[in-house]
Image 1 (cartoon, rainbow, N blue to C red):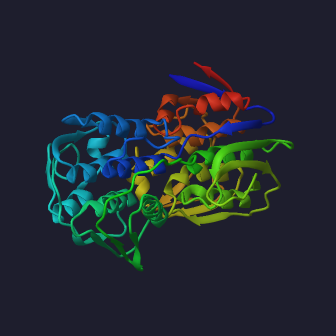
Image 2 (cartoon, rainbow, N blue to C red):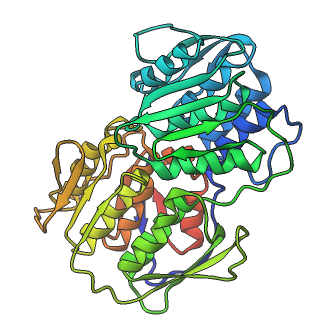
Length: 415
């Protein structure tokens, strides 16, 4: 399937964003470890969260988490400390995404995990049992999802967990989000040194819980407003929290540099509210930023800055190589279709200094990656009639994205 997208001349819209996938998936794991009866309120309805909900409800022998990387990592740790034997598997792409750093760490703690296929990759055969816990060293530059998976089972370990992160620590905001969510359910888990996290053994306390909406999803609306640029345009986004622990909430600061102002309806700490985005003049000559703490925003800013003719150097992108696709190569290929020559350095940096080529305006390929579709759709504000292949991939994190675009006045045709 292919969509042809044309943007409106002016955007005036109120959008109810999807619930945070990051928080939903963490709360579901903690809720299961706590033995809770009532699911949290405002759970994400995306594919990644749905596979966790189904797995925890049925707990079959074979658990297929499809393309959900977070689910693979979190469920690997959860099943290791939960009685029963399971085969944990996923899509062909998932079977090529590395899992060895997490499995090695769990093996060190005494987990019974075997590879059902190629060593280092899913599928996994897991025999759950009680683990002792104790002191564990892992590299700090591995995916934060590995670290979060280990932290969340910490309270279920007999001796708790003392996690030493060796070397550079990446995606620290996601680790902090995990610790904050654990604390919301009574866990004693905290940084006890610059590179040490201590989790004490205890039982999580289950209680009613409201999940805030997704700051990552908001980034595409910021992008639309930055690119659309018409005076009088504004977008209201519901369910966002001022002072959010979501790492991607940094989007409001970054887009303020690009001329998009964020106004909160109220400032009650920790309470979801509505934010209003308005467009102002952008005078920024270039944007250089380290995305180590928020790599999921990289695609949004590559598209936005290039289309605004703002040169950039974006670092901290090493994890993009092992996402749903190789996002570095995908960005270079698809931006070239729009006439922009993006360069990469050492698989960690993307740079653009204004280099252009003749745009082919071929349909944008999405590579089975939701964020490729989400980040490139706003480019229709500069390229009327932009076409996107396989638009259904957005169901992974933002299932009603295209409906929301239509509500905002975008014309979307299936071709």
